[in-house]
Length: 389
Image 1 (cartoon, rainbow, N blue to C red):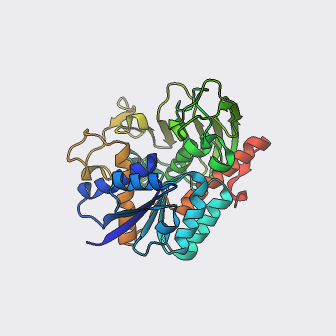
Image 2: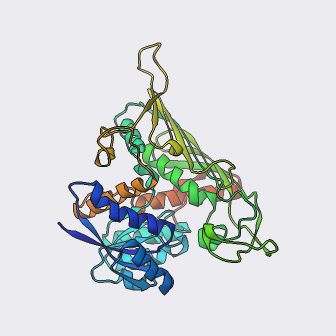
Image 3: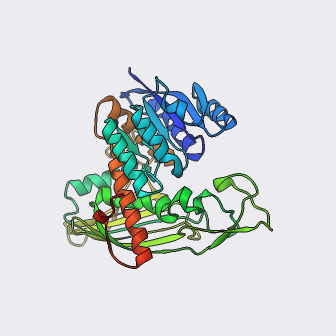
C-alpha cells in the first residue's frame, strides 16, 4: 500500500483534531486508498512542536513551517495554523509541489484567498479546505437527495451557525477579535461553514445584502494563555473589538433560490448550533448539527393524510456511515467528520479524484464574505462576481 506522508503545521485544537483523524482513519476504512504516515509537525516554538509531535505520533518536528513545506518526503502539507498565515504557508507549499489541506476560512482576505488558489492552480497540486460540516452522513445524504431531484426545484435556503462561546464580555481579547489576524469575526469563523453548505447544496450565491453588529465592543487584555484558553485579570486594560459578533445575510442564488444566512458568536445558550432548512417544489429537509445523526425530510408526493416531516436516522445505507458501524443509530461525532474528510483527501490524491471543497470552493466562500462585509458597510446589495480579490 502506498504511503502518503503528512506534514502538519499547527498543534492546537484543529491540529489535534486532524491528527486523531489520521490515526483513526486506517482503522475505519477498508480498503485504504493510501496510508497516512505522520512525518513531521511544525509549530511556532520548539516546545509546542516537540510536544505536538510526541502527543500526536509524528516522526519528527520543526520550528516554523519552512522545514515542513520543503521536506523531501512530505506529500501533503496540512495547515491548521491561525488564519493570518494560511496564505504564506499555502503558497510556499504549492511552489514546493505539495498537495495542500487547509483549515477554513481559506484566508483572512479575499486577495490572499485568490493568491492561494492561483498558486495551487499554477503548481497543479490538489487542495482541500476543512469545511468538515459538509461531511456528516446526513448532509452527504441531503446533497444526494437534492442532486437526484427528490426536492424538485430549490426555492429557499435558511442557514444558521450560532454559539455562545464568546458571549461573556470578560473573556479576554485575542487574535480572534483583530481584523489583520482573523479577518471578520462570526462571519468568517462560523458563517463561512454555512456559506459553504449553502453553495454545496443549492448553488453559488449571486448577490447578498448583509447586516453586521458588534455587541461587545471592548474586551480586557489577556494576562496569560491564548485563544479560547486565555486568562484575564479583573483590572486588565481594555482593547477595542475590531470585527463582528453577529451577521445576517439575505442571499439570492444563481439558480434562482432565495435564502438567509445568520451567525453569532454571542448567542446565549447555543453551543454548536449549525442548522439549515431547504425548501423545494417537491419537498423539504432540515438538519441541526447538535442532533447530527438525524435528517428530517418532507416529500409533497407522499399520500395525502401521511404528509409531514419524517426523521431519517443515518445508517449503512447512507454515505460513509457503513465504514463506521453496520447498523443505523450508533451515531457519529465531530471527529468522525474529520476522519471522513481525511479519507476523501487521501483517496483523491492516491486515485486522482476530484476533491471537494477545494481551494476554488474556499475562494468562492471568501467572495461571499467579502461581499457581505462591503454590503454591511455600504448598506446595499453586492454582486458576488464583483468581488474578485
